[in-house]
Amino acid sequence: MIQFPHLQKRQTIGVTAPSSGVQPSLHDMFQLSCERMKKRGYDVICGETVWHQEKAKSAPAIERANELQYMMTCNEIDHIIPPWGGQLLMEVLEHLDFSTMHKKWILGYSDTSALLLAFTLKTGIATAHGPNLVDLRGEESDQTTAMWEKVLSTEEEMDITQFSSYKYQKEWQHDTPSQHVFHLTEPTRWRTVHPQEKAVKGRLMGGCIDIIRHLAGTPFGDVKAFQETFIKDEPILWYFENCALNATSMKRSLVQLKLAGWFDHCSGIMFGRSAVDVPVEGYQYRDVYEELQKELQIPIFYDIDCGHVPPQMTLINGAYAEVQLQPQGKAVLKQAFLL
Image 1 (cartoon, rainbow, N blue to C red):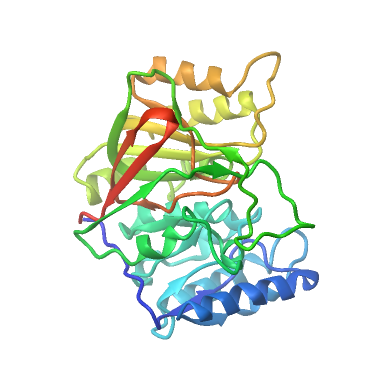
Image 2: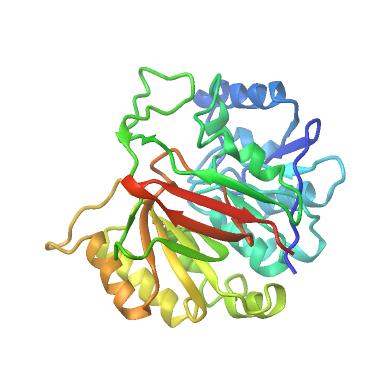
């Protein structure tokens, strides 16, 4: 049985940095993110790890783990939103006691997705792959990003519908900030390997493939046990976003996950947009997706609103999802918080 946390106004958001913290030159930006959250009606408590960054991490692994463990077990904090991802969250996992953690949302993406996926696989408590705290610092949010709050406020046994974005951001323009952080200029178009494949459904699971691939073969990546224990062997609908892998690295990663059994009972796979689609001797992402579809004989969707090319939907690890592609590359995602 999956358990779903529930976000409510006047609750307290705990901000800890289990991966990267915020360097001093960016403290003002981070504090603005906290102020925006308070204006939305939430209290904010920041941990010590947030204010430091040295040698690719906010603090030694045990310190990061202890602060996260405290925030996940204390009654004063209701949910967790790290400032952003980073590089070395993987170091923290072995120092955590998931069995004592409370039912709280953890929201984020990139390196944070290692924590999200591990926590859901180990406990059956849903987690939220969506905007980081710093992505929410704008005077307002675009329609896609703004859905994080409605999604996390959905009650158990209810459902929530999201729609694909109208436009996405091709590149950052830090010197000309927008009211909603991102510069959405390019028409969004979700795609599928085979045009006749318009729908897919299953229990959502996934994250940044650069990161979560390293969970395979560890105690934190036991997908088979999760399916048997928490979702009664329902098929998984995987979603992956890619930060830095070229086409051949992506293919190696997918082969690894296939050999690890992650796709043994899988209804489909969805891939987010990526800014690093650089061909390797002519071999590109589209080739990877086509080969994967032939190998697994399941629907493959790509260029979805997920990951490092914003905006992104809020995807719930553990929710029952139905995805429907519509004309002109639009899409509808319904997530049901079924136990």
